Amino acid sequence: MTYPQVLDYLSASERLGIKFGLSNIKKLLRATGIGDEKFRIIHITGTNGKGSVAIFLSSILKQAGFKVGLYTSPHLIDFRERIQVDGRYISKRKVAQLLSQLLFFTRTPHAKFSQKPTYFEIMTALALQYFSQANVEIAILEVGMGGRLDATNVFNHSLVSIITNVNHEHTEYLGKRISDISREKAGIIKNNGIVITGVKQKRALGIIKGVCRKKKTRLFRLGKDIKVQYVNQRKDANNFCDFQMFNYQGIFDSFRDLKIRLLGRHQIENAALALGAIEGLRLRGIQVAENHLRKGLEKATWSGRLEVLNCVNRKGENCRVVLDGAHNPSAMRSLKNALLEGVIPHRRIILVLGVLKDKDVKKMMAEIAPLCQEVVVTSPDTERGLDKNLLRREVINYLPSGKVRMENGVGEALMRALEVASTDDLICVTGSLYTVGEAKRALKR
Image 1 (cartoon, rainbow, N blue to C red):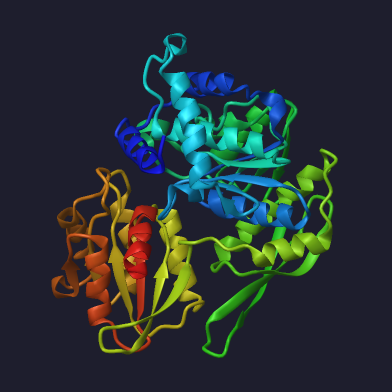
Image 2 (cartoon, helix red, strand yellow):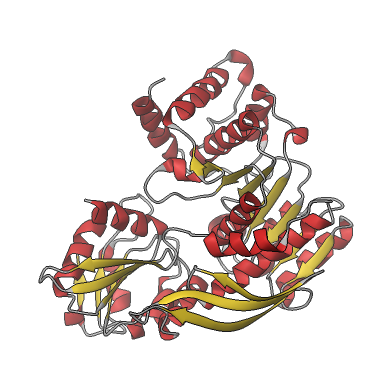
């Protein structure tokens, strides 16, 4: 199989949509000889912050000398972003080799798949096969959706399970109530395990506590067992936030003046969950020195999450573009708060907005639209993208219709924003990671 054939196959498999269940992934892993004994796993679910927590953990463990596999989703530009070992993407050659092996198995008569493996199932099997061959010491797995029936939940054990937070999302799959969504996410909790959580809602927390009691699992909570205190942010000569500092009081240790380069106060909570997981590893006999912890936090970067790029508009004037994959009301609130905190100095905000059909657009707009002086609405290039006309109807509840423009694609929307931007304006691209990925591709061109 050639790499172009890989891309064609994966593109076709995306059209199969979403399917919950562990039958396919178990068959795929059995065919490749991968079992529970192959991996030491850190498993992460939650509505927001999963990827950031995963990145912090990967960076810390890499600094500590571990060989680390990292599996995240979705990707922004190249699907190989999803599968990394020690911060390096899986090679194209390796993708073609491993996918050929997987597809050979799926086409044999004894495979007996009731349905073809989905894109996410294939990607998960590919990642685990790669991690196995690379002999990773710790694999960090980010749940795709929910947890209980997610393809990443194929193993019976984990070193640590992390539930970042719980809010309404994917209600057609996970249920409409917070309690339903919480049960799905609590499905990653293992017997005699260790759970770190940032969940605060009483009902959601009650469900997580109940599962932990039933499975004799230790639970450590942000705000109770793990506490953080924001210290300050250091700004550079252009008044731009260079890094944030915070203090941490955890399960065993306390640290002062920890630094992270990811922007927004919400990233301090994500860093704290990662630190809680590192402390949880101590209960498994895995130690990480303080200097590795500090260096790992400071070196962690995560594309498309309050990522700031310096650009030049059509008039040759300097302006900034911030890319943030906020795709639900709580994530949009975090973006809003970061902008209000002044982490990115600006004169006006010009919003480039594209969201998916299944999102709570009304609540998302209530968070971000009042901050903006102009908005360019579009639709990301996916069947799941919300029609730009429907999106515009929501936005004009907050801005005069003359300040709300429409463009057919994300690239065109970004170019329009650059046309109207002036010196020191901030162009904020958000609404979906699909939108952010398309914007990054447009900026590369």
